[in-house]
Length: 88
Image (cartoon, rainbow, N blue to C red):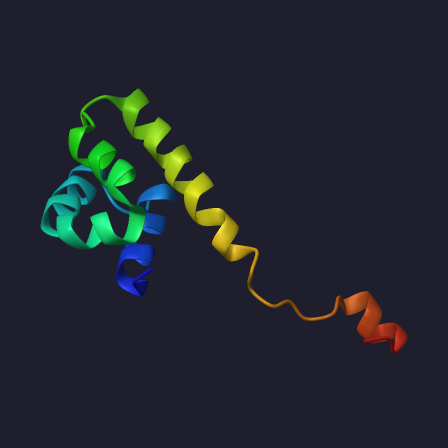
């Protein structure tokens, strides 16, 4: 997924951007979102009523569930406890 799209989605999930700004962003990046998220998510973002707080919160949860698995593939360093014990 494009880094700009990923960042914008996480800003929305974390509430770092307003709902109205995110809605405008969705329409500007409509073609990219279809490619990045697939047609189903793309369609849900377009049809969502951004004035409905429940729909917005549901979408935040759905987006987080969709994006979070990609975070688990990031290589991790050995824990501090292992480093202190001399294990790698």
